[in-house]
Image 1 (cartoon, rainbow, N blue to C red):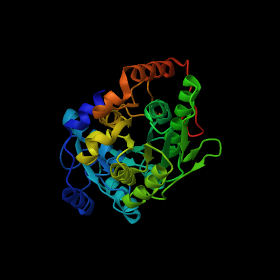
Image 2: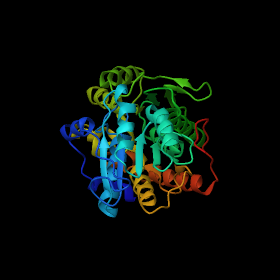
Image 3: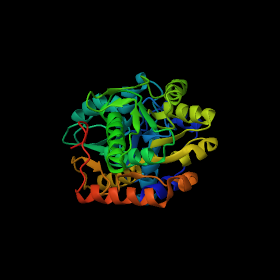
Image 4: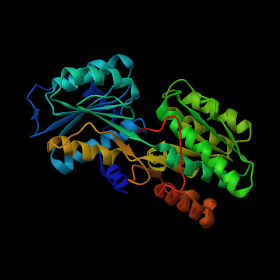
Length: 355
């Protein structure tokens, strides 16, 4: 996939540089030229910060790649708490750039307000549907890839129990969880097994949540609770909190995790690499590159980008160190399921499926 190579190639800012970007005064207004090129773009992170090992980091890597590939002057405004959100969007607008990219549901209201007030600026928002003539949502049908991950988890569990938890009960989160438990159920149907999936009731649309996406210790506590109930494969959908699941798995010694958004094998601390079974990928970087290019070249539209297995907007990362645990037969089953979903022979549904 192109995203993996782009993200690997992109240079992620250090926290020091990120902090400076958040505090720096707005560049002088200069139409679409900004201060550093023929076209400029500004990105605003959600309150999780830039190096979140999630969609802020992936989105910024994509915008950096667009800058390198198309000569776009790209800068990021880092939000570290909720009070930064609206001021940072305002600062992005005041830069005079032609494209403002925001990340996450926390920025939905500010994005819509500024888009309505600035119809000549293109806006794009990651992981949220916001309607407007000059707003392009960037969303992903992660249930499709999470279905494959659930099937995988059911296929490798040695205890007969797997689990998932989220940071908050929101559609971009529960979409993963819906797909995951459906994948487990499908494995049970195909193989006549009874693998249990803890942490999410799809019918009730309710389950286990930490209440935020930043407190790693909450992830440790929740994951340890699942491990105590016998779970040996855990899917955290909780941003940085998910690192706590990796820590709990490492302490337990008999559990593995499935990461989300980007390849956790590459983005988590290296000591957790042996525990990453796979990752449910959102190929945010490719989408951002294409949208930045379209905005630069006057081809921007407000039609939502929806990442699917078919367009490679979502997918599974390699099994890395745990490939032997998966084995060729299970890997082949997953490849077959992927093609069935692409062909429409197998439909993965969720109340949160983006349209």
